[in-house]
Image 1 (cartoon, rainbow, N blue to C red):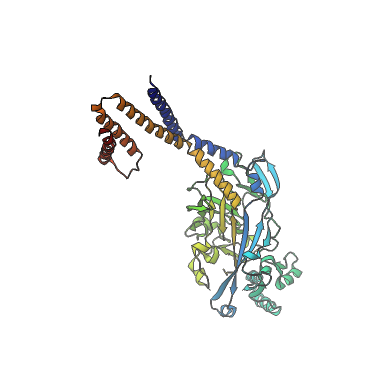
Image 2: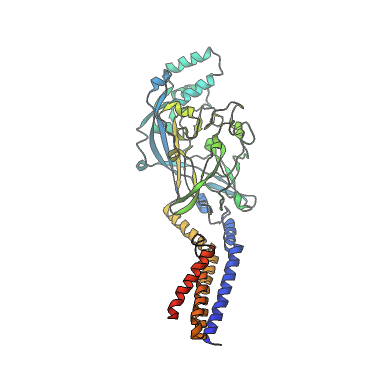
Length: 502
């Protein structure tokens, strides 16, 4: 056997093995299955796992931005007109949220933790000084007292109103942004405190929330099922709440929003328990996006989350008392805010009933500025999230997690490795195809040397026609089809044969 023949046989054997092995691996999905199974085992909150440290102390910066609505025409509103509001802000605070007091339960399948949050003002990301800038807005303690008086006698209510006017308390109040956020001694609450010591004399939207936590959470570690990674088992010892009027509304579903299971699907709903909203919400897939070079799925709350019970009967459970419901786009959370008349919505009443927007001058709801969403990498569930859940406009906030550049670079490298390993069968098939091309060329050249000069043209035509067919097998589908492809193959073969026939 000649050296040329050995080369042809060896090339053919290697080519056949590569094509068979590559196609088999491709069809069986061996490498993707291996990687996904590995991820399911690695992505747990078990002691010593790769993701535990990042879960305990998130490396990404977290910023909380507050905006306030300043009322510019209180006299007009008191006379029955429409309130004109102007948004001021943002006032930005860097939020630190380490997890503390970690304790493993039930053989490591559950993990209890506290999540204290502290806030530090970031002047370079803010529109002004919160200790100097003042805002005129609705006096919530005043409204809370008047709301409580609605159940009292008709003769008592005017007396209480006169008493509040005598101490200088009105429907509107003007305070610094710092006071409105972190608390101030309210004159009305101070007087009530002397009569009822259990009533706190301080008020603020974030009063007592700097350095405090929302209670003890028990999380599932994902050891038994990767789909349970980070899912809340209990909150303050409860598996369901008692504030709302239906069992479904009282359910504590999903995670706390800081972590999600790996290998996300576009078809699934993501559930988050939001303690600030006193309820669980869900998000649905919207579109594919890219964050710092990392592919991601965008999830956002669909319209049915805050839809009226007429449009979504499941939301009837959020009407307290039962049957007393607000219109679409708003949620009354008085039941978990010590009875304070607080209603939450998306910023500027985005996705809410138009009547709420029309009740004010100065509101401009739009998707680009006011949509709440999560951008999650479907493999690792790493995300960037600007979220903004704020019926009188007082303030709104924007909570933003942004993956830092180092973490993003590491993530890009990991995703590149996963992509290369997952596509290894394609590389094997591709290398086999290249060897197939080499094999065809070797056979053609071998045949040319063996045949007589009179048959050389025919041999060349046959070989190069075969090359033409092989080439067309890898052409895009729309380039040619059917008879046209065959004709093109013959033309390619003839053109290749002409030089040898001269």
